[in-house]
Image (cartoon, rainbow, N blue to C red; front, side, top):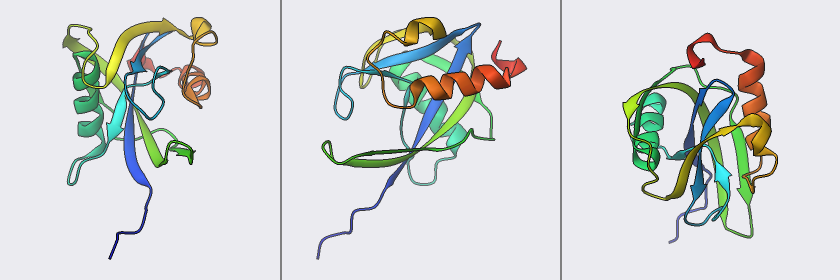
Length: 141
């Protein structure tokens, strides 16, 4: 008997410095070659904030702390690439480390919101960046 297909749960690590957000360029499918927030699958028994910190470290080499309260979840469905994720974004603050692309990221960079329009990017990236900027969370400055 085969298991039914079910949506996967993932996290997005949303960190910024001024008006620049930390983004990664995806090295593998899904979304190969496009820019998005660092993130990945939630592991069994893992808290959301811990998953965001782990994914950020794996993909960027940076250490951060994350809020326990997530932003509005994003539904990502792509039948052509065979995925259905519920992505839970969490805001974080970098505490240390050295920026370098790792794991499934081919590049990692601080990107100003004004420069995101020209990037090949995952759906919803601009909307999420704008949401964070509108809220102007003081711990993200």
